[in-house]
Length: 257
Image (cartoon, rainbow, N blue to C red; front, side, top):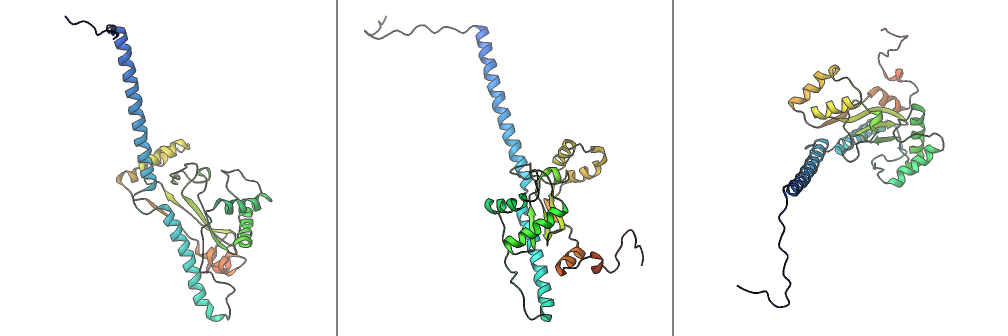
């Protein structure tokens, strides 16, 4: 029989765990495993949500850029067509820029704050839009601009939330001389997300079920806007009333011809 080496401490005999201690340890391990699985499932849901929001096709920002180019092309075509009747153009309209820098946005907000006060999630009214049009003209010498990323609280339930911050939406308004000519947005193309968003905002699902069901068959990410051409022409020409650009204007007092 071997004897312990001199000066080396003997390890105390390892105690066996009782059944109660084993059960407690197993319960702890199971709890940790459940927590790990829950975190993995959450990460997978977030990744899937981001994938659905961003979509596999054209990024939302390209839709806004496309609308911007459409407005620029329309103006350029009118200048080319009507320019022959004039001897001088006041300024070049070939350049447009995105005011993405915070300091520029803050500069506009400072001008608005001197006249009107708005909460962050509140929409602006017609008089405020006209005021903003004057500010944009004074600051950037332009009558054409796009406001991007509206709060979710002022957009319909089917508007796609911003993938970074769902408090905002992938939506925009296009303005000419301080008046809106169209509202546009990316719409939700996922049936589950659409139903969840509708229920969260208090929309009765039974009233829109056919609309939701249509997306169960699959839909591409999509966005766009419907432009009111009569309003565009009115604002482009600086006319005082939209009736002047409509062949057969209609209002409560005029139903014929």
